[in-house]
Length: 139
Image 1 (tube, rainbow, N blue to C red):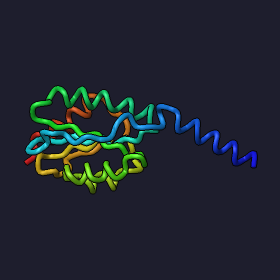
Image 2: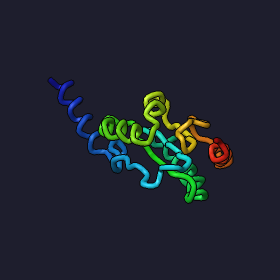
Image 3: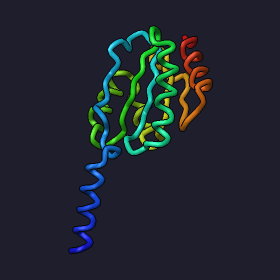
Image 4: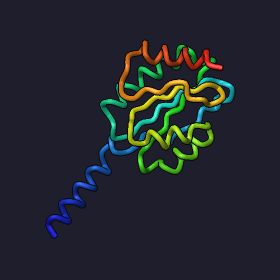
């Protein structure tokens, strides 16, 4: 009985922690058609590593914002159905399914949604930029 109460207490605390919940549901880029796509797959519990990757990738993407779309997909259980639908809508469902357990992962896709490069874990800005430029040159 005491063990059960402790488990319930831990569950309550974890569910109340801001890091245990996603900020918001994933959103599809409105202008993804015909553009190179960067897909950042993360888990809401992956704070240190994912939070290190996100700003770097966003910075690289913003430099090329007119010709590149950016998509973040949450692998958390709370958004599983939405995330799958979002990945499918953007032609990257296989990438999402293959990388659920390897977050953070960043994929660089041609406008036809061919995966040109993907990177796991934190990398330097130059590595992300080189991968993006490679995807932009792909036919």
